[in-house]
Image 1 (cartoon, helix red, strand yellow):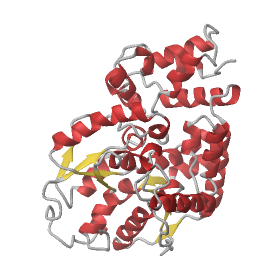
Image 2 (image 1 turned 60 degrees about the vertical axis):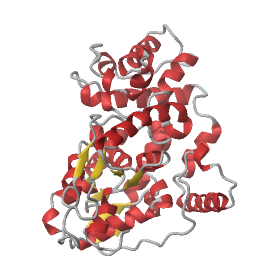
Image 3 (image 1 turned 90 degrees about the vertical axis):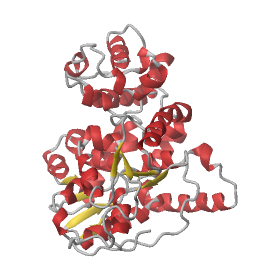
Image 4 (image 1 turned 135 degrees about the horizontal axis):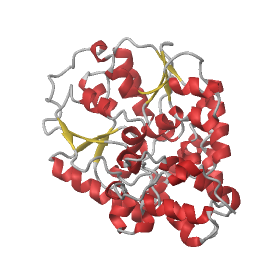
Length: 391
């Protein structure tokens, strides 16, 4: 059994160690094996046949990665660590028992939106009856039972709604839609064919399923309009379809994808004046939490500061964008390590002097909220500041 990774990618690491302070799992364990260069060294050993692909220690080291890709930003050699990790996990999934059947079933359910909504409703009812241990499962304390439908108001842009976020945080999509419409933008809501971007499947090593979802998303959306995404992880995935599928069609699709903050920041003069003078709603300011896939992958995090800064004092966390520990399904599958990583983020929030945090990714917001942090999506804050209907 082998990984069959790109040798150029694998040999690009020069073991300098500059990635270590930016790796959340290394920061909390100080274990070299749980660092980017330690994981790359292990990948090389598997490729050389020195250790087996299904070696339990190797599997654990690969599975322990949050896939935040903070190491890529820090790396002077430009090692594509995310690509290496995705290839490694796909090899593990194809050649070993890395992903049990119940996880595979869960990831596949994300692409069936009606099933996801029905299941979410059942869980929400179970929460009300105190039958669901929400905290242990990493769920929000009170999932919605029913949410108002989103309807299109035009065709200037497409708002990608996705899977978990639409099932659990559709109110954020509603805020995004209201803010865009206040700037005179006609918004088309993506349909059921774009029910899931495939990010969680790709992170889990289910490459074939991720590619199936990618093809379905491309086929279901209009061919020319900009595609706006309000979840950092989904946006990073959609922008990567060109690499994932390797077709001109996929590359053209990815070129039309924008994080909603970066798109609106270039048209900020189209927004109306706030209903209240800046800084009145949140006098203590708003701390911005940079989702890893917005900061390290899309490199579009500055737009969040630019937009939120129009309506409230912005507090910059002093941890250089270190991961919060959410990592998609990571906080559910590895809650202890995710909690240790989150503790460092909570300390940075405490030092900022405010209790209100803006986060542009659903996994991050739920992970922080589970620790008692007041978290809002940046567009929820803008929606409220403009007096459009947001709380």
